[in-house]
Length: 349
Image (cartoon, rainbow, N blue to C red; front, top):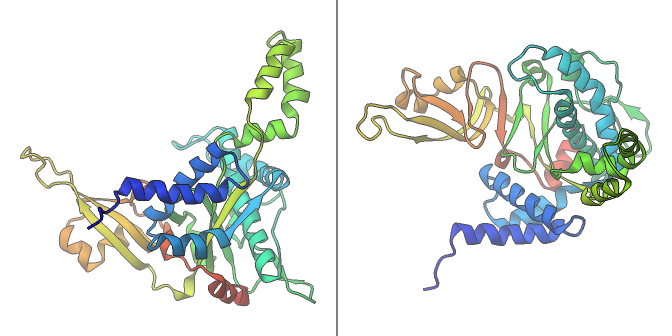
């Protein structure tokens, strides 16, 4: 009987297949890194039940490629939003510097741009996104689609409100933090944006900001010599296209909320090594719904093992402890995908 391949062998084989696909547009290193990320994310999100089916019928048909113009659009749209959010987060414990907030926010716009490209390429309709720069923070809870244009017709408002969420390639979960948006949205769409680690600096090189602005200034200040400027220039990678995987969607009216689906496992020990230390935790590895502590503890199967609510409950893969704030989660394996399902989505749009 042939020996069953190890998990490591299976993982490496899957990475190799995805790497070959991504390497058509990316360097070998970036293709390999992103291949590892997407396999970890998709597998962790219970998305890969049969690898060949996932790769051929879900992943590759739902990947779109974004170029430097798309990236420029994303960071331009992100800057005013990042400025507003930075001001609203002042004094918070999770405060990020503006540069990080800017690039993090830009990833969200990359996802929206990718979704627009995906729909327009595959379904023959045009989407208009709201790119106004004077919106209040509360305005961002509205639909991410401003208007829709079908063949032989003008633009019209969408029939449903759509939230387009974006994560990294290794994301396992689609999540929505805004309670107001959870209430107002009819459909959730999730996109993974495969940005390389050096994407922002590579873009600054691509648009010649470094060579035409920063390096000459540094030379005038005596910080760089022309030779050192050339060395730095050559050391910075070229900007590469960004693969964006439009992973799937959920229609809210098809969900039995507040908790539509829940898959979990109990980890740890009530009396760890006989020391009286309780290391137990409930790890949610699959789920769809508003996963608050109250909503989860109300389920009979959780009450049975956690009657007093003393056992910590976390979202698997991101180790985020569940609290009482409304927070919509959906593991990526729960999302609808495929041309037939997408066509039904478009018909409602």
